[in-house]
Image 1: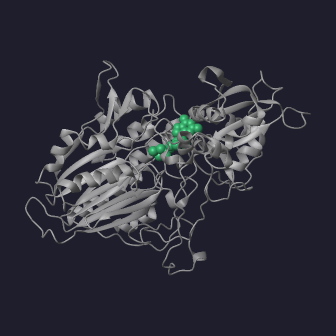
Image 2: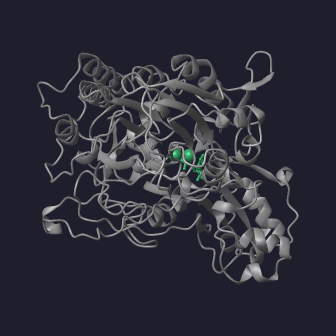
Length: 587
Ligand SMILES: Nc1nc2c(ncn2[C@@H]2O[C@H](COP(=O)(O)O)[C@@H](O)[C@H]2O)c(=O)[nH]1
Ligand SMILES: [Zn+2]
Ligand SMILES: [Zn+2]
């Protein structure tokens, strides 16, 4: 039977500030719709969230206020509930669609593969028909091949209770790693489109609502802010962003704010706005509305507190049914099948790299040397490279299950290699891919600028593959009332509105930067010293950059010089095999 979600630790909570209009926001859920079974702070599931949004809407409407539910993409890839089924998403589309969502858009993960984007077009868009927006995203129609908008470009509507006239848009950042059956229009081009200009010129608007799979601090949201402000100098603008997996809040001006609500169903973002004009009420333009944000830990303790309900009065039947559906799906997928017993916690960001607590050190020093072994190249030394962004979550001491495998490594990436590369050059690859070191100096200027740019902003031919570094949860400026040792570790977010955004007071968690890529050198037994030549093995996702890095080293390899390494294996399958072989004692 499935482990019961751990009951959340009771902790001091900050109350919400309600307004005329209130929003609940999820982003980058990445299949975590069953919640976090090993982390009490985030143990609510999508069914619980459905009950929460229903009760919050009831509470708002009882006070004559409105409540809208928003999701900004990356709903797939990152948890067994999505990744373990065949076809992927067999259960999650039906689960997600049962939540009433008022505005929804697409993330980059929905665009990496043809079937993912076609699932959006064929399943999610119809499921959320009037709520799905695609302001800068087209798809090649799955049957006709014609290029069409994935969903409507924008939407004008008036809220039920307050009569607030809203124009809403749904964007994705200038993503270039999408499969060629979709087209992402750069935001700077979208703002020049006639339809966009006509939509923002409308004077009968009390609030512009821009949702997007876009970081709140990004050239794309700045572009949209400036374009709207150019023609509507004082109409309030509310942004909802995502993609960088952090809690953040950006102030563009006194009447324009942007909220980003974390990742993996750890956070339910809450935003309220009070003092807006409506279809029946005009407010003084000099008076700025009051914006208020809260990051809600996704657990039942928070949900009960914010709805002022309890274990008896809070649940809705629909929400409880979806929770049952989630448990049944997990059972069917056998996600709690244990592969082994993790000897210790292994952290992505909470531990320095390298260190014995770093998941990346574990991968580099223990796993890759054991598993990167193609039967046809066993007598050859090899460099094995994996992007840190391919590892998606921490490992907790205790049962490592089928679900854990997909949580840590959800992608279908296999390995490829270039054989017999001169070692003196191959040994410089890692430095180039990690954008540091003296190697860059002797490159031609154009390539230097590419390398010296932060990986996040590199040229479009190399979309970001780096591991986003979460904004280190800074120390709370106002020390919590309780001493830290009374508080459980968790988010302590500092943003443009200060450091009181988290609904739950936590002790801070350290966060460290990690490189783009890690590497192991694996030599055949009895080999002494470095080889003349070496096989360069890498996870296939980073092939574009590996080939570019070879060019920096004056090695003119092309895709024709690459080949599959360990046919049929992926990082996910290799990880499962290693755990089964090395962590097999009972937990
Ligand atoms: N090894 C692989 N890494 C991948 C793959 N697809 C994506 N990624 C990594 O995810 C981030 C983007 O994630 P997001 O949730 O922040 O949008 C990307 O930069 C890569 O690091 C893959 O197939 N294999
Ligand atoms: Zn994401
Ligand atoms: Zn993303």
